[in-house]
Length: 82
Figure 1 (tube, helix red, strand yellow):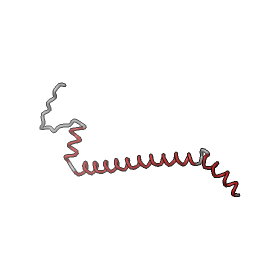
Figure 2 (cartoon, rainbow, N blue to C red; figure 1 turned 90 degrees about the vertical axis):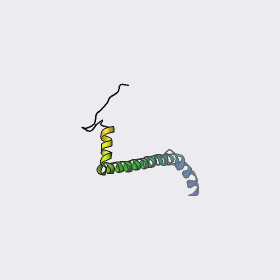
Figure 3 (cartoon, rainbow, N blue to C red; figure 1 turned 30 degrees about the vertical axis):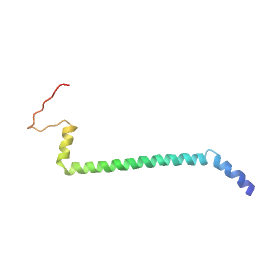
Figure 4 (tube, rainbow, N blue to C red; figure 1 turned 180 degrees about the horizontal axis):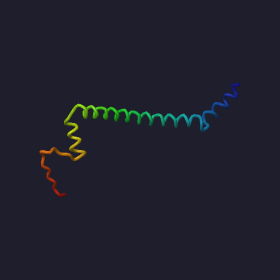
């Protein structure tokens, strides 16, 4: 039994489905965990932004001006050539 274990364990560990596969899966898990942490930070940032858009009229105005190019009716727009 001992001689079988001495032969079988290295064979099982060194074959492609053994230790190399384990290392590859651990590396993949680290990458997935890193991506998951980044996505959690992005979700939190977006939640804060949504809260601002719901509660802060100046945030809505800033987006309307910066991203949509909107102005108030009472404002005069000057466009200069580049």
